[in-house]
Image (tube, rainbow, N blue to C red; front, side, top):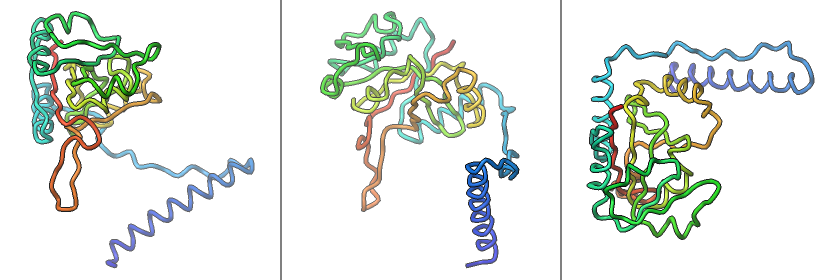
Length: 224
């Protein structure tokens, strides 16, 4: 082991021991041990322009094999209908506007916490449509949280996920996303982080989609 690796390992183990020691003294009623300091010298805010941020998001998502479409609010029903043209049935959260599906011919099942669909009903639909809470351009990650993202199960079982990403909800950096989640009061809510279609690699290192979630991901960047 190199001296650099050994030093890093010693530093990590030292932090773990210090954290355990601090937890032990607190459990015994002694709060005199100072908490372990956490470095906060990473970037908290991005100076990138909005167009640059959206370009970065599109690049990441397409690299993950997702499709990306831009749409205005007026065009959204047409865009959703086009992406769902092969679907016979879809599931959506109850909180999504009815107008979004004005041109969609697929049978729409509505899911909610108060009136949830069964696992069998969700598994039988062709696609799911949701909105999103926050989206991180730097990592190409869509955070599904909040009422318009629906219950987690509806975004994990169908083979096709169409997600509407409001441009106003796109941030550049992960710390900015965390701040946005806190501002919205979502930091302690169940959430799913999506970076492209579900994918895994088998023992032959062949990438396979759809093993743990939707095989196809269509992202609509909604201009608002």
